[in-house]
Length: 212
Ligand code: CDP
Image (cartoon, rainbow, N blue to C red):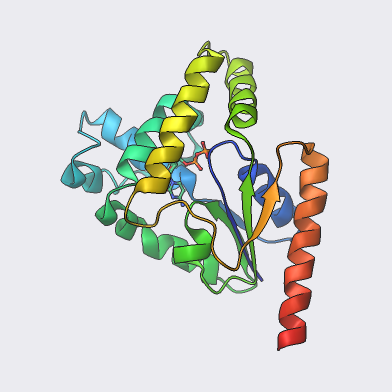
């Protein structure tokens, strides 16, 4: 079974995707980490994230980078949103994500374009969202716990900029797939979000069985 989980920054998609992977015993890929690794590589080599050729050169990153905790920094997320808008960066990372989705037994992938581009035939598709204020509060708490002193207002502003950039780009924009179901986590605890996500996946799989 392939499960696609998409949504904006700090919507809860990563938490939901990890929990679904545990629940169904499936491998999980956080595709945002790939774009974050490209961004970190751009920064490490003093390249310009806005120049497509620079960003493409950074796609050939060392695998060990994927486990570097600094990939989670907000500055890296902001850079990731710039490099990920380049079509050639997206195509450089495409096969790797496709292969992960197609592995025997299935997989859970989370990102921005999983249901629309990477795994359009996924068995279940969730679009996870929450209000910008609530997402900013979550991200702010997360960053503060890691000793990052970025203010709430700055985090909220960054989230809005990233939402706009991710949704407005012409290649693989952040958009709910027509056959994806919406999970609004604004007023749900983590446990309730995960319970609801499992119910939604079960319902989609049942519906597909009936139609088959
Ligand atoms: O955790 P958060 O949602 O803040 O970010 P992320 O999922 O790690 O993604 C970082 C950036 O990578 C996003 O702002 C997107 O611009 C980009 N991204 C993308 O374009 N496509 C994906 N499948 C995943 C991430």
